[in-house]
Amino acid sequence: MRTIATAVCAFLLLPLSAQERPDTVYTFRFVPQKDMFYVPWGGNDTELERLLQCVERYREDILSGEAPLYVDGWCNSLDGERENLRVAAIRSNRVKSELIVRGGIKEECFITRNHASDGDFVIVRLTVPAPEASAAESDGPGEAEAERLAAERAEQERKAAEERRRAEEARRAAGQAEADRLAKEQAAGQAEQPQEITAAPLESQPSAPYRFALRANLLRWATLTPDVGVEWRISPSVGIMVNGSWTSWTWQDNARRYALWEVAPEVRWYLGETKRGYLGAMFKAGQFNYKLSATGRQGDLLGGGITGGYRLPLTEALSMDFTLGLGFLNADTERYDVTDGVRVRRGTETKHWWGPINAGVTLVWKLF
Image (cartoon, rainbow, N blue to C red; front, top):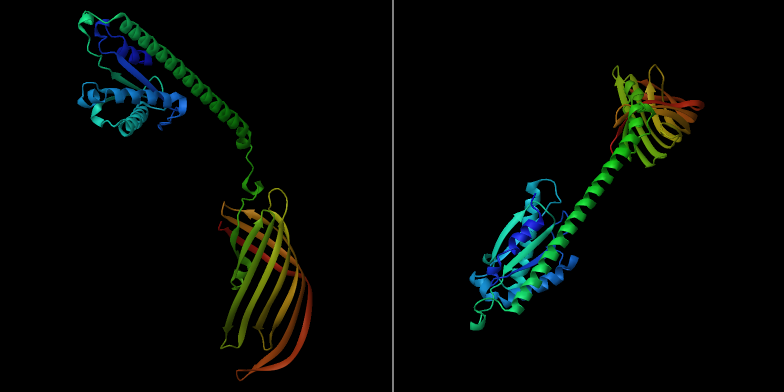
């Protein structure tokens, strides 16, 4: 792999006979894996100010093409050569944009190359035209000029060494971070492995959280009494539910009738870690009208009691709810006969009932 030393030395280690056009190198650092040019970061502001001063000094030579700006973008902190080259190109364009906007030069003034190796930085090199030598200096640079060139080359070599050191530290840090990440993933995998081996069956796992669900009591549907309901889980342990039933059937030319409607709100407390079993409090109200023999009965019913049951999961979205309710019902009943199609009242009665007041095998569908 090419190193930054190769790139810089290729620019700097020129024959001393060419010292009339010395190279000036400027280095701009980038955050690994990022393409944004943070000017105040890593000394980029100082380096940019130096470069802008140099551009201002040699603007005419740069605009005429005599002194082009060589821009090399570098990136090796991403996966894959293609991605590194793409980010290196973006970094080069960011630096060039700053020079175009603040230095007043054009895109044609740049010669750009991008590299998928060595580090996260952009190097700008300007071959500075040396001032014309006087007759006394025509045989070679003076002593002061030679000292200046030597000092500049030493500074450039120092910067190259510093960049190599920074690139190596960044690679080591990235390698350590990757090793830590793999170690954490391995530890997490080992912690989860026993759970996968001893995974509990679906019915023994905690109930999946949900907020709203639709319900259908299959026992009521089996008696041709449509029954639907909704449940709102205000917390994992508490649910508010409302069930409703309605049916109306007649046969034998209206000589027989079966009609009913009920509304039954309920509050439930789900128990245990799995939240499968529950206890609840229910209220029930409705009306009925049935005539299965010569005498029919119609009236109102009102009552309530406690409920209990268990919810068996079928899938992630479906479960079966087995319910039994015990309590009190009051029914104000009116007996009647039908004569020539007219209901004839035969008396009233009031009945009280203690015992089972509700039963259900209910299909529950979690909406969300």
